[in-house]
Amino acid sequence: MARRRITLSQNFLHDTDAVRRLVRFSRVGPGDLVVEPGAGEGPLTAALARTCREVVAYEIDPRLAARLERRFAGRPEVRPVRGDFLRASPPHEPFAVVGNIPYSRTTDIVRWCLAAPALTSATLLTQREYARKHTGDYGRWPLLTVLSWPCHDWLLGCRVGRGSFVPVPRTDSAALRIERRSTPLLPPDRLPGYRAFVEHGFTGVGGSLAATLARRHRTRRVRAACAAAGVGTDTPVGLVAPRQWLVLFGELGRG
Image 1 (tube, one colour):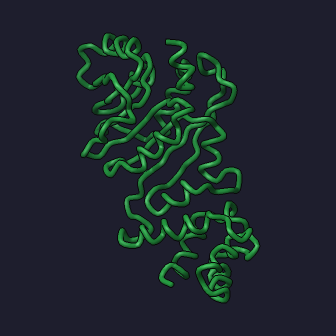
Image 2 (cartoon, rainbow, N blue to C red):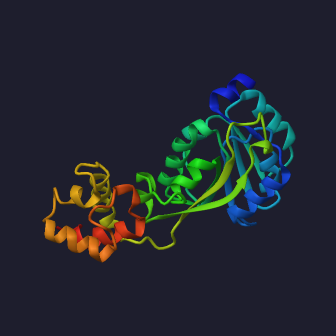
């Protein structure tokens, strides 16, 4: 079991205060369906079960899954599932994801959540660097955050020290919440164009975002769009905030 956990880069969260803070940050409540990836022995599962209507707890390790089933036997609000969360079909009804996830599978789990049509939010305990990076806490914005921004907000939560886990990881963790917007910032028919626009901008051809955009749009239009968005013409792509991307797309996206 230990070898399996090392392979997945998952560490057990034993700090009850950190569990409470994670549940509080998730903002889930009595009427909510929650899906939990990597439930382990169930400390977070138990806290969620006290808060939510139903918890579907996935565990890929057979021995841990068996323990989970024994622990929550006779608890109809908890449904343990033996298997890989990433192979599961998302629920059709509104649901939230809350989990202390394996570091090595963070990107895959985040992408699964972003692609789930009925997801309301995903609250994940990740490496602190990942959470800070994807919420713009370093002053830079990665492609995944910018691509999903019209439909999802990214929020940085509490820091959880490495001593809160067994085995102890090399770095601290932090809570990350990805929240689906009730009203998207762009109409659905414009989302494919926005994503194509952003992906081109992140190709990095030209040394700055303005130089990259000028390969497809007139230089004068690019300069005007950058001025409207408050983006310098020498600004690297990573320093352009999602709200500025929306302005740039509004100015250039139909061209």
